Image (cartoon, rainbow, N blue to C red; front, side, top):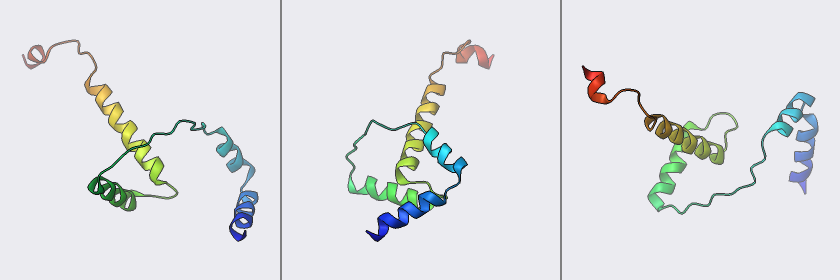
Length: 89
């Protein structure tokens, strides 16, 4: 019970601007469940402990890693105007 009252007091202490920012965030309605080996799980935990800054959660860190890798793959897969041989000439 004590935890819930402390959450309420923290929420009421937020400024109006902070509350509006929270309201503007997109709702995450889809879940992604992954199965990991013990080594993969330990690696993710170590990474999160090392690079967690501010209020980043493990979920946010993993989301950012997945999406940044996707962007890199999309950039590499873009069609090119010239072939690699033509660019080397």
